[in-house]
Amino acid sequence: MATPSIHPALPEVIEQLAPLERRPGSPGEAQAAAWIARRLRDAGCEAEVEDAEFHDGYAKPIGALAAVTTLAGVVSLHERGRVAGGVAALLAGAAIADDVANTRRVFRRLTKPLPTQNVVAIAGDHDADRTLVVMAHHDAAATGVIFDDRFQAWLAHEFPGLVERLDTSFPLWWLVLAGPAAVAIGAARRRRSLIALGTAIAAVTTATMADIATGATVPGANDNLTAVAVLVALAERLRDEPIHGLRVMLVSCGAEEVIQGGINSFAERHFPTLPRNRTWFLNLDTVGSPILAMCEGEGPVIMEDYFDRRFRDLIARIADQSGAPLRRGMRARNSTDAVIPSHARYPTATLVSIDRHKALSNYHLPSDTPDNIDYRTVAQALYVTEAVARELATNPWI
Image (tube, rainbow, N blue to C red; front, side, top):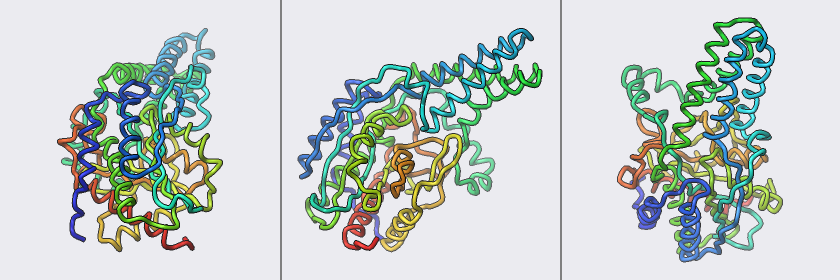
């Protein structure tokens, strides 16, 4: 396949929204949502900004739990506080795992919910009983020292064979959980050295999360305005060449960067009207790196493949038949909004992109600007997404 032409909406959307500071729950995020809705209406969609809520997550609550673990470790070093400190560390570790794994999230639910916005638009055949939900998110992340990508580049340069063999990202959250685990186990076994190690890990985690919580908001061009741009371009493609037999929901969520915020409000509002046997979710996240890839699953704590491999196989087959290069087999140790529909047992897939080091280009860095986008990959993501929509529309037996 010849390289797809760059749809004019792709650079337009990214360049318009990148200057806005779109931290979750911020005025800039709300401004971006309003702009996206207007732009989708201009592209022929029914589009609305839906109010949503999220409980602030990621840096602040994880940092607080790590601080609790640090204090628990100090207490556990003294025999009189060993049991209490060990129990506190165990509970803090359980709360961290519960939060990052998108389960009950007991700890963050103790905080007051904050407002965010989801953009929901309808394209394609509005009366069809089958739906493809194409997802993006329009908020942007805060940066921090932990996101410096020089170590990963060094590792790929020094050990290219190792990096080539590994298609699952490094489990950074395991390191976070190692702190409370070491304190709790050390306290139970009266191992002061293990308690001290866990306390040190928890202290480093606390400092790391504080750095992120106070870090500047990045432009977020690749993560994730590239996906928002695909939504707008897809809306224009479906307006200019309509499809029948498939409704296409174009959804851009807010507060994704706090480890799934706005998507939970979308799920509460829309999942009851979306039958599982007639709905597919295609998530687009950070599709502006040089190589288009399919993420097969994710799991900060325990790896879980997305529900219903048949949908992922269909996407790969469509990409292959179209001549669009799509790398398979990638799995992420962080999380995306795709985990919510997958947990609800909808057929789910995620398109991402990677560089030659198997990293997301400029991930959570100030360098995540429109100038550093590989628009060829964004165009390929648009091409594959449109082809999937047309396949689902024309083959009702899928």
